Structures are given as C-alpha cells and as structure tokens.
Length: 307
Ligand code: CP
Ligand code: NVA
Image (cartoon, rainbow, N blue to C red):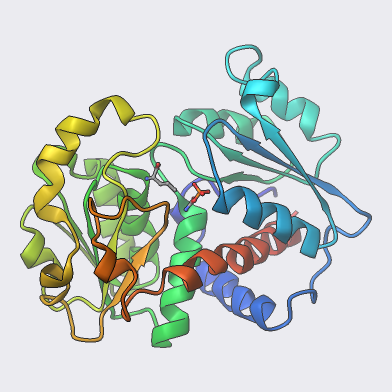
C-alpha cells in the first residue's frame, strides 16, 4: 500500500528509527541506494520559497539515481487553476514520487488521496516533517540516543516547526517542551496527538508560556523565525510579543551547559536568536542543514520500498 509522509506521525516509532538509521548509513555511504535508477523522476513542487529543501531534494534524488523535476506553482497549472487531485492523477503516471511545499495541510491530503505514488510534505503551514527527520538525525549524531532527552522549542508554537517538534519528538521518546506566548500555542489536537504517542514511547509533552521554565535543564534548545512564510503582514505584532522568547546566551544558560542549539534556517539574527548563540560552539545548524540531504534520501528509499 502506498505510504505518504504528510505529518511526523505518519510513521511509527519503529519506522522513524529505521529511517534515521538508514539516513546515517547513507551519510557514510552516499551512493549505496539507487532506487530511482532508470532514471525515474520525482516531482518537487514549491508554492513557497526555499533554499535548503529545494537543494537537498534535488541533490538527494540525483544521488538515488533519479531526476528531480522542480516545479514552481507560479509557472504551473496548480494553485487555483487545477485541483491537487487532478494534478496528482497526471503526475502519478510519470513520476515515482511527489514532494510538495504548500500552505494548508488539506491540499497535501487531497494530493495523497488522489495518487498511487508517495506524497511527501516539504513544509506546510501546519507541519515540516522532513526538517524534523533532519533535526533528529543531527541530535542523534551529537548525542547518540534520542529517547529520554529533553528538547525545548521556543517561539511560535503554532507554526509548522513547533507542531512538528511535538509529534516527531514524542515519536522518538523524547521529552518535548514548547515555550510560546499563549496566543501562539500549538493546536490542541496536535498536543493531544503528541501526548498519546508519548505514552507509548516513554516521552512526554509540555506546553508552557514561561520561556525560562521551558528551557530549564534542556538537552536541546530550538527556535525558528517568528514570522513564517505567509505571515509577513503580522511581523510588527509578532516581534512585539515574541521578544521574551529570544534565544540569547542568557536564555541558553538556563539549559544544560552542553545543550545543543538548532535552527532550521533561514534565521533572522537579532530576532529569534542572537548571533553569538547561532554562530557559537553549541550551535549545530550546519550539520542540521546537511542532514536534510541524508534524512530525505532515507525517507524516499523507505517510501519506495513500501510500494
Ligand atoms: N529549513 C528549510 O526548510 O529551509 P528552506 O526554506 O530554505 O527550504
Ligand atoms: N516556520 C518557517 C520555516 C521555514 C523553513 C516558515 O514556515 O517560514
């Protein structure tokens, strides 16, 4: 049966572990897997801007023996002109998989329901699950094990990154804390879903308003832009509310002394994080950006094996 990856909890804890192990193997042996040899094509569609996702999928698909077909929605019939389901029906006869960065999660669900090839969420308003595979791979690279670690995401808890942190870290058996203003808390449904997963993995989930309490004793501190794509008109209001959640060296001092710092990038230095932290010794952002390549290759290999 076709498997899709639209949310972090579309894979079980065992499947997540299997994909992360494969990602580490592919990092060590980059051209080992060639499931797209032929070459087969993978459509990679962007409704929003991207540097890392575009490059890592294009390079990763080429590494797997395939051809990436990068499509900007603005130059295609998708996006108001043709439905996601009709687009899916056209693509599935020609491509091995569909990767899509879009706005609402509902579009991805329509696309997946309409096709027999795997559909991958390359970021939606609600989730960024490929980034979380990369983040978990990076934390594992630096800490060995994921289960039992405490990870704190500070900032917009209702954003794709905040919500994916909840689901993916609960799946990995981690203790995940979101520190965000009350008006930017993650959706109650996502918190409930993460809490249910955590009961089976030994992890835990907490949503807090106090940033210092959220960061206290954490093994990993994470933040992201306060102004996600599509929210640009809210920038002034957001900057006014999120100031107390900035990750600076004083905030990092509340975490463990050797806590890792992650940021999916792009970063607004001076807003959600100060330059001394993001460019400092605890920051693993460049490993994290590289992990996108290995983690997404592992995901594609795994999804194609389930076909
Ligand atoms: N982290 C991330 O998804 O970066 P891009 O927006 O550059 O793809
Ligand atoms: N939360 C950010 C992530 C960018 C990779 C956004 O959606 O713009």
